Amino acid sequence: MSYKRSIAVQVPAKVNLQLSVGGRRDDGFHELASIYLAVSCFDSVTLTPAEELRVTVSGAGAGAVPADESNIAAQAVKLLAEERGIHPGVHVHLDKRIPVQGGMAGGSADAAGALVGCNALWNLGISRQGLVSLGAELGSDVPFSVLGGAAYGSGRGERLTSLPTGVTYHWVFATADFGLSTPEVFAEQERRRRDAGLPWAADAIPSPRMSQKLVDALVDGNIAALAEGLSNDLEPVAMSMRPELARTFKAGTSAGALAGILCGSGATVGFLVSDRREAETVAEQLLASGTCTSAHIAHGPVPGPEAEEAITNGESS
Ligand code: C5P
Image 1 (cartoon, rainbow, N blue to C red):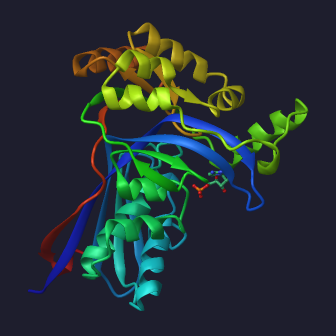
Image 2 (cartoon, rainbow, N blue to C red; image 1 turned 135 degrees about the vertical axis):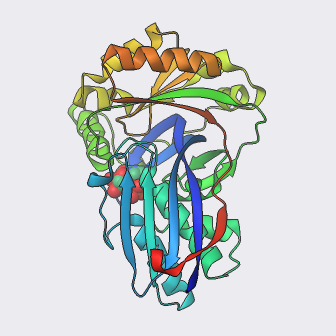
Protein backbone atom coordinates (compact mmCIF):
# COMPACT_ATOMS: atom_id res chain seq x y z
CA MET A 1 0.00 0.00 0.00
CA SER A 2 1.27 3.50 -0.86
CA TYR A 3 0.97 6.49 1.43
CA LYS A 4 0.66 10.18 0.64
CA ARG A 5 1.10 13.30 2.65
CA SER A 6 -1.89 15.54 2.69
CA ILE A 7 -2.37 18.99 4.14
CA ALA A 8 -5.67 20.26 5.53
CA VAL A 9 -6.26 23.93 6.25
CA GLN A 10 -9.29 25.51 7.92
CA VAL A 11 -9.67 29.10 6.73
CA PRO A 12 -12.01 31.62 8.36
CA ALA A 13 -14.52 33.94 6.71
CA LYS A 14 -14.43 37.70 7.32
CA VAL A 15 -16.85 40.48 8.05
CA ASN A 16 -16.02 44.15 7.45
CA LEU A 17 -16.82 46.29 10.48
CA GLN A 18 -16.12 49.34 8.36
CA LEU A 19 -16.14 49.40 4.57
CA SER A 20 -15.64 52.91 3.22
CA VAL A 21 -15.38 53.16 -0.54
CA GLY A 22 -13.44 55.96 -2.22
CA GLY A 23 -13.07 56.64 -5.92
CA ARG A 24 -12.27 54.23 -8.74
CA ARG A 25 -8.59 54.12 -9.68
CA ASP A 26 -7.15 53.74 -13.18
CA ASP A 27 -6.67 50.00 -12.53
CA GLY A 28 -10.44 49.61 -11.96
CA PHE A 29 -10.20 49.04 -8.19
CA HIS A 30 -11.63 51.40 -5.60
CA GLU A 31 -9.69 52.98 -2.76
CA LEU A 32 -10.97 51.44 0.47
CA ALA A 33 -10.77 51.91 4.21
CA SER A 34 -11.70 48.56 5.68
CA ILE A 35 -11.69 47.06 9.16
CA TYR A 36 -11.65 43.30 8.82
CA LEU A 37 -12.61 40.73 11.44
CA ALA A 38 -11.97 37.00 10.87
CA VAL A 39 -14.90 34.92 12.14
CA SER A 40 -15.38 31.25 12.99
CA CYS A 41 -17.12 30.10 9.83
CA PHE A 42 -14.57 28.00 7.97
CA ASP A 43 -13.89 26.53 4.55
CA SER A 44 -11.71 23.46 4.61
CA VAL A 45 -8.97 23.22 1.96
CA THR A 46 -7.27 19.82 1.55
CA LEU A 47 -4.20 19.44 -0.65
CA THR A 48 -2.93 16.06 -1.81
CA PRO A 49 -0.11 15.39 -4.30
CA ALA A 50 -1.52 14.36 -7.71
CA GLU A 51 -0.33 13.95 -11.32
CA GLU A 52 -1.94 17.23 -12.41
CA LEU A 53 -3.64 20.17 -10.78
CA ARG A 54 -7.31 19.40 -10.17
CA VAL A 55 -10.09 20.87 -8.06
CA THR A 56 -13.11 19.26 -6.41
CA VAL A 57 -15.73 21.04 -4.33
CA SER A 58 -18.25 19.87 -1.74
CA GLY A 59 -20.49 21.55 0.83
CA ALA A 60 -23.05 24.35 0.76
CA GLY A 61 -23.31 26.12 -2.60
CA ALA A 62 -20.64 23.84 -4.14
CA GLY A 63 -22.51 23.78 -7.46
CA ALA A 64 -21.82 27.50 -7.96
CA VAL A 65 -18.05 27.14 -7.41
CA PRO A 66 -15.86 26.35 -10.46
CA ALA A 67 -14.22 22.93 -10.11
CA ASP A 68 -11.41 23.64 -12.55
CA GLU A 69 -8.26 25.73 -13.00
CA SER A 70 -10.25 28.98 -13.03
CA ASN A 71 -10.93 28.48 -9.30
CA ILE A 72 -9.01 31.07 -7.29
CA ALA A 73 -7.53 28.29 -5.11
CA ALA A 74 -6.08 26.65 -8.26
CA GLN A 75 -4.69 30.04 -9.30
CA ALA A 76 -3.01 30.27 -5.90
CA VAL A 77 -1.39 26.84 -6.38
CA LYS A 78 -0.15 27.89 -9.83
CA LEU A 79 1.18 31.22 -8.57
CA LEU A 80 3.22 29.56 -5.84
CA ALA A 81 4.40 26.78 -8.20
CA GLU A 82 5.52 29.29 -10.85
CA GLU A 83 7.22 31.41 -8.21
CA ARG A 84 9.27 28.42 -7.04
CA GLY A 85 9.59 26.47 -10.31
CA ILE A 86 7.56 23.52 -9.01
CA HIS A 87 5.14 21.32 -11.01
CA PRO A 88 1.66 22.19 -9.63
CA GLY A 89 0.56 18.56 -9.31
CA VAL A 90 -1.97 18.92 -6.50
CA HIS A 91 -5.52 17.78 -5.89
CA VAL A 92 -7.26 20.70 -4.19
CA HIS A 93 -10.45 19.76 -2.38
CA LEU A 94 -12.64 22.58 -1.07
CA ASP A 95 -15.33 21.84 1.49
CA LYS A 96 -17.48 24.97 1.57
CA ARG A 97 -19.19 26.33 4.64
CA ILE A 98 -18.56 30.02 3.98
CA PRO A 99 -21.56 31.30 1.98
CA VAL A 100 -20.83 31.45 -1.75
CA GLN A 101 -21.14 35.00 -3.21
CA GLY A 102 -21.95 36.08 0.31
CA GLY A 103 -19.43 38.90 0.80
CA MET A 104 -17.53 36.91 3.44
CA ALA A 105 -14.40 36.26 1.33
CA GLY A 106 -15.13 32.57 0.72
CA GLY A 107 -13.11 32.46 -2.53
CA SER A 108 -10.29 34.46 -0.93
CA ALA A 109 -10.29 32.03 2.00
CA ASP A 110 -9.84 29.11 -0.42
CA ALA A 111 -6.93 30.91 -2.11
CA ALA A 112 -5.38 31.65 1.28
CA GLY A 113 -5.77 27.99 2.29
CA ALA A 114 -4.07 26.91 -0.93
CA LEU A 115 -1.14 29.30 -0.32
CA VAL A 116 -0.67 28.25 3.31
CA GLY A 117 -1.21 24.57 2.43
CA CYS A 118 1.18 24.42 -0.56
CA ASN A 119 3.80 26.28 1.46
CA ALA A 120 3.64 23.35 3.92
CA LEU A 121 3.19 20.57 1.33
CA TRP A 122 6.25 21.70 -0.64
CA ASN A 123 8.26 22.69 2.47
CA LEU A 124 8.86 26.16 1.06
CA GLY A 125 9.30 27.95 4.37
CA ILE A 126 7.72 31.21 3.11
CA SER A 127 6.90 33.57 6.00
CA ARG A 128 3.34 34.60 6.78
CA GLN A 129 4.18 38.10 5.52
CA GLY A 130 5.53 36.60 2.28
CA LEU A 131 2.25 34.72 1.77
CA VAL A 132 0.27 37.90 2.55
CA SER A 133 2.18 39.71 -0.24
CA LEU A 134 1.62 36.86 -2.71
CA GLY A 135 -2.08 36.87 -1.79
CA ALA A 136 -2.40 40.46 -3.05
CA GLU A 137 -1.69 39.17 -6.57
CA LEU A 138 -4.79 36.96 -6.36
CA GLY A 139 -7.44 39.29 -4.93
CA SER A 140 -8.04 42.24 -2.63
CA ASP A 141 -9.26 40.14 0.33
CA VAL A 142 -6.74 37.29 0.03
CA PRO A 143 -4.04 39.01 2.15
CA PHE A 144 -6.45 39.35 5.07
CA SER A 145 -7.60 35.74 4.63
CA VAL A 146 -3.94 34.70 5.04
CA LEU A 147 -3.48 36.95 8.08
CA GLY A 148 -6.70 36.43 10.10
CA GLY A 149 -7.48 38.11 13.42
CA ALA A 150 -8.51 41.74 13.05
CA ALA A 151 -6.87 44.27 10.76
CA TYR A 152 -7.20 47.60 9.05
CA GLY A 153 -6.90 47.52 5.27
CA SER A 154 -6.18 50.43 2.93
CA GLY A 155 -5.32 50.73 -0.77
CA ARG A 156 -7.69 48.32 -2.50
CA GLY A 157 -7.99 46.50 0.85
CA GLU A 158 -4.68 44.65 0.62
CA ARG A 159 -2.38 46.92 2.65
CA LEU A 160 -2.90 45.59 6.17
CA THR A 161 -2.16 46.64 9.73
CA SER A 162 -3.10 44.10 12.41
CA LEU A 163 -5.35 45.35 15.21
CA PRO A 164 -4.74 43.63 18.54
CA THR A 165 -7.88 42.81 20.50
CA GLY A 166 -8.27 40.23 23.23
CA VAL A 167 -12.05 40.56 23.12
CA THR A 168 -14.32 38.00 21.44
CA TYR A 169 -17.48 39.19 19.66
CA HIS A 170 -20.46 36.99 18.86
CA TRP A 171 -22.26 37.05 15.53
CA VAL A 172 -25.04 35.50 13.50
CA PHE A 173 -24.69 35.46 9.73
CA ALA A 174 -27.91 35.20 7.72
CA THR A 175 -27.40 33.84 4.22
CA ALA A 176 -29.66 34.78 1.31
CA ASP A 177 -31.05 32.47 -1.37
CA PHE A 178 -29.24 34.66 -3.92
CA GLY A 179 -25.67 35.92 -4.28
CA LEU A 180 -24.42 39.38 -5.20
CA SER A 181 -21.54 39.90 -7.59
CA THR A 182 -18.84 42.19 -6.13
CA PRO A 183 -18.00 43.92 -9.47
CA GLU A 184 -21.72 44.53 -10.08
CA VAL A 185 -22.23 46.12 -6.64
CA PHE A 186 -19.19 48.40 -7.09
CA ALA A 187 -20.42 49.32 -10.61
CA GLU A 188 -23.88 50.13 -9.26
CA GLN A 189 -22.37 52.35 -6.59
CA GLU A 190 -20.46 54.26 -9.25
CA ARG A 191 -23.59 54.59 -11.40
CA ARG A 192 -25.44 56.08 -8.43
CA ARG A 193 -22.60 58.53 -7.80
CA ARG A 194 -22.54 59.61 -11.45
CA ASP A 195 -26.35 59.95 -11.60
CA ALA A 196 -26.23 62.19 -8.52
CA GLY A 197 -23.56 64.34 -10.18
CA LEU A 198 -21.03 63.31 -7.51
CA PRO A 199 -17.33 62.68 -8.18
CA TRP A 200 -16.44 59.03 -8.64
CA ALA A 201 -12.77 58.87 -9.73
CA ALA A 202 -10.01 58.24 -7.17
CA ASP A 203 -8.25 61.52 -8.01
CA ALA A 204 -11.49 63.47 -7.34
CA ILE A 205 -12.37 61.93 -3.95
CA PRO A 206 -10.14 61.98 -0.85
CA SER A 207 -8.99 58.50 0.16
CA PRO A 208 -11.35 57.09 2.79
CA ARG A 209 -9.99 56.86 6.32
CA MET A 210 -10.15 54.32 9.07
CA SER A 211 -12.66 55.13 11.81
CA GLN A 212 -10.53 55.54 14.94
CA LYS A 213 -13.70 55.44 17.04
CA LEU A 214 -14.54 52.01 15.68
CA VAL A 215 -11.00 50.73 16.20
CA ASP A 216 -11.05 51.96 19.80
CA ALA A 217 -14.41 50.24 20.38
CA LEU A 218 -13.10 47.00 18.85
CA VAL A 219 -9.86 46.96 20.81
CA ASP A 220 -11.44 48.05 24.12
CA GLY A 221 -14.36 45.61 23.95
CA ASN A 222 -16.93 48.41 23.89
CA ILE A 223 -19.66 46.41 22.17
CA ALA A 224 -22.27 49.20 22.30
CA ALA A 225 -19.92 51.60 20.50
CA LEU A 226 -18.96 48.85 18.06
CA ALA A 227 -22.63 48.18 17.26
CA GLU A 228 -23.25 51.87 16.76
CA GLY A 229 -20.19 52.40 14.56
CA LEU A 230 -20.56 49.49 12.11
CA SER A 231 -20.70 50.94 8.60
CA ASN A 232 -20.59 49.68 5.04
CA ASP A 233 -20.91 52.06 2.08
CA LEU A 234 -22.04 49.17 -0.13
CA GLU A 235 -25.04 48.39 2.10
CA PRO A 236 -27.49 50.94 0.60
CA VAL A 237 -26.30 49.94 -2.88
CA ALA A 238 -26.87 46.22 -2.30
CA MET A 239 -30.24 46.98 -0.69
CA SER A 240 -31.33 48.97 -3.73
CA MET A 241 -30.37 45.97 -5.89
CA ARG A 242 -32.09 43.49 -3.56
CA PRO A 243 -34.78 45.30 -1.53
CA GLU A 244 -35.73 42.05 0.22
CA LEU A 245 -32.54 42.39 2.31
CA ALA A 246 -34.42 45.01 4.38
CA ARG A 247 -36.63 42.24 5.76
CA THR A 248 -33.57 40.26 6.88
CA PHE A 249 -32.15 43.29 8.71
CA LYS A 250 -35.50 43.90 10.41
CA ALA A 251 -35.86 40.25 11.44
CA GLY A 252 -32.40 40.18 13.05
CA THR A 253 -32.71 43.42 14.97
CA SER A 254 -36.28 42.58 16.08
CA ALA A 255 -34.89 39.29 17.41
CA GLY A 256 -32.52 41.20 19.70
CA ALA A 257 -29.32 41.70 17.69
CA LEU A 258 -27.40 44.85 18.67
CA ALA A 259 -26.84 45.78 15.03
CA GLY A 260 -26.85 44.36 11.52
CA ILE A 261 -24.28 44.99 8.81
CA LEU A 262 -24.06 43.82 5.21
CA CYS A 263 -21.03 41.56 4.76
CA GLY A 264 -18.74 43.13 2.12
CA SER A 265 -20.75 43.48 -1.09
CA GLY A 266 -23.43 41.06 0.21
CA ALA A 267 -25.59 39.14 0.14
CA THR A 268 -25.00 37.79 3.68
CA VAL A 269 -26.13 39.99 6.59
CA GLY A 270 -24.08 39.85 9.81
CA PHE A 271 -25.68 40.51 13.19
CA LEU A 272 -23.62 41.51 16.20
CA VAL A 273 -25.10 39.98 19.37
CA SER A 274 -24.28 40.36 23.06
CA ASP A 275 -23.24 36.75 23.76
CA ARG A 276 -23.39 33.18 22.56
CA ARG A 277 -26.82 32.49 24.10
CA GLU A 278 -28.26 35.53 22.35
CA ALA A 279 -26.73 34.26 19.11
CA GLU A 280 -28.84 31.10 19.35
CA THR A 281 -32.04 33.07 19.96
CA VAL A 282 -31.35 35.45 17.07
CA ALA A 283 -30.39 32.57 14.73
CA GLU A 284 -33.59 30.67 15.55
CA GLN A 285 -35.78 33.72 15.07
CA LEU A 286 -34.06 34.66 11.82
CA LEU A 287 -34.71 31.19 10.45
CA ALA A 288 -38.32 31.24 11.67
CA SER A 289 -38.85 34.61 9.93
CA GLY A 290 -38.18 32.97 6.55
CA THR A 291 -35.95 35.90 5.53
CA CYS A 292 -32.78 33.81 5.18
CA THR A 293 -31.83 30.32 4.08
CA SER A 294 -29.43 29.61 6.94
CA ALA A 295 -28.12 31.34 10.05
CA HIS A 296 -24.50 30.68 11.07
CA ILE A 297 -23.45 31.27 14.66
CA ALA A 298 -19.86 32.49 14.84
CA HIS A 299 -17.39 34.52 16.87
CA GLY A 300 -14.33 36.59 16.11
CA PRO A 301 -11.57 37.46 15.90
CA VAL A 302 -10.13 34.04 15.12
CA PRO A 303 -6.55 33.39 13.96
CA GLY A 304 -5.58 32.93 10.33
CA PRO A 305 -5.18 29.54 8.65
CA GLU A 306 -2.63 26.95 9.84
CA ALA A 307 -1.63 23.82 7.93
CA GLU A 308 -2.36 20.43 9.50
CA GLU A 309 -0.42 17.52 8.06
CA ALA A 310 -1.69 13.94 7.72
CA ILE A 311 -0.54 10.75 6.06
CA THR A 312 -3.32 9.22 3.99
CA ASN A 313 -3.81 6.07 2.00
CA GLY A 314 -2.52 7.06 -1.46
CA GLU A 315 -5.45 5.29 -3.19
CA SER A 316 -7.93 7.77 -1.71
CA SER A 317 -6.95 10.81 -3.80
O1 C5P B 1 -9.83 41.90 -5.78
P1 C5P B 1 -11.04 41.08 -6.09
O2 C5P B 1 -10.80 40.11 -7.24
O3 C5P B 1 -11.66 40.42 -4.93
O4 C5P B 1 -12.11 42.11 -6.63
C1 C5P B 1 -13.27 41.70 -7.31
C2 C5P B 1 -13.90 42.89 -7.97
O5 C5P B 1 -14.43 43.79 -6.97
C3 C5P B 1 -12.95 43.75 -8.78
O6 C5P B 1 -12.82 43.28 -10.09
C4 C5P B 1 -13.64 45.11 -8.73
O7 C5P B 1 -14.71 45.16 -9.65
C5 C5P B 1 -14.23 45.13 -7.34
N1 C5P B 1 -13.34 45.79 -6.37
C6 C5P B 1 -13.14 47.15 -6.46
N2 C5P B 1 -12.32 47.76 -5.56
C7 C5P B 1 -11.70 47.05 -4.57
C8 C5P B 1 -11.91 45.68 -4.46
C9 C5P B 1 -12.73 45.06 -5.38
O8 C5P B 1 -13.70 47.80 -7.35
N3 C5P B 1 -10.92 47.69 -3.72
